[in-house]
Amino acid sequence: MWKQKPENVSVPAFVPIPEPVRPAAPLPAADARPRAAFAGSDQTSLNKGIVVKGHISGTDPLFIDCTVEGTISIPGERVTIGKNGHVIAAKSGEPGPCITAREIVILGSVTGSVFASDRVDLRAQASLAGDVSTARVSIEDGAYFRGGIDIRRDQKPAQPATAEASSADAPAEAQPAEAVEVQLSL
Image (cartoon, rainbow, N blue to C red):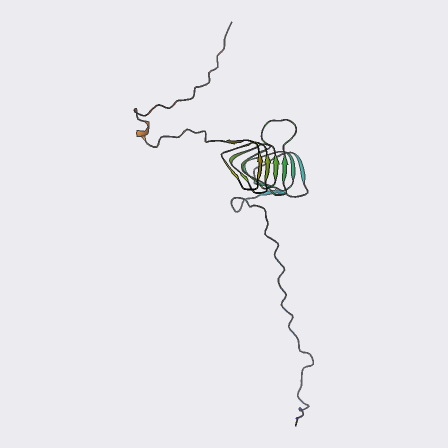
């Protein structure tokens, strides 16, 4: 039959149960903003909810995801207009581009002309109503563009590779005339 347990055997009254493993908190979604061209660079960001009226200038790359009514001048760096960014040229009638930079990347909308010493990049969903002046331009499918494009070439004349290239039998290149100031007396 069944056997009884001896009474002097001790059974612990409480057996600890290990706490279940909890999953780690989810990491935030990857930031959708484009990063600067090289690591270690500082980038200034103007995010949603901000309205800027006037002129923005600086020396660091700039990310705009807000509304800017005016001009932006970051000559040696990259300016990125995020998908929520809107740049509207100043209504003061002053000539010139509303954005001046080395590189301009547009994901949002820009109303006004832009000047980039290197390149202008219009991504899908971007909108640009204005003229573009740059050395290189890229327009993705789905982007809206209304305006003219002025592709700027390097202003330096090409140097001959060797001395033979500038020999006497080669045709002479036309040289630009020098400006001379003349005063007339009557």
